[in-house]
Amino acid sequence: MVGKAKKWKNGIDTGPTYKVQGCFVARFVIFIGASMSRNVSGGAYEVVRDAIASYQRQADKEPWQNDHDAAMRCFDLEEILWVGNGIFDVITQFDENNQSRCLSGAVEYDPELTNSIKDLYRTWFESGSNFIPRLERCRKEFGHVANSEGFLSRRREAEGILTEDSVYFSSRVIVDLRDEALDEFRAGNVDNCSGCQ
Image (cartoon, rainbow, N blue to C red; front, side, top):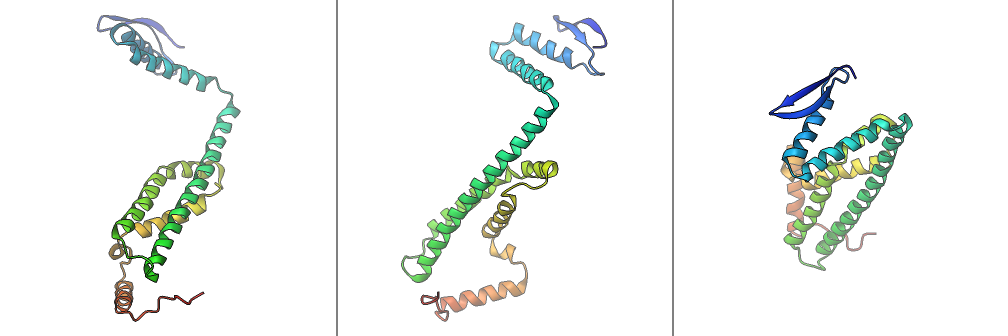
């Protein structure tokens, strides 16, 4: 604490101002607290009070606790990625079963079901995007993060599934091969591998 003085703001006694390491954080907090307690309902004041309490708890932590908390957040992320990988695998199995039934003629092709499956992939992919910054922080701090390689591989696969073929296969040669294969399939010139093992 460097200095102490009485401050006034809009006719409100904000109490003493403490200069802490060159900034006026304490004055701001005291001013907000005084303003809230005199001019605003208790809800906003409680938010500020709780924020100060949380800030104080962080300041009071032993140095090892911060390292432990960071390690636990990464451990939690490893488990979340494991669950996410499992969810992706279930979606993929459902997709493969649907495609196999369609190709074998057991069921009619259903574009609504295909779009619903794509929506499942999209939801999985978009939800997983939220974990990328956490994953990068954990890798930077701890190196290896369990389940991360499988997660990133599945993200690339989902991106390929969700990207339109014309964008994903930008090479003209690949597009021509795809179109030729589809034409052959539609013409009935392709064995559906019903006897394949």
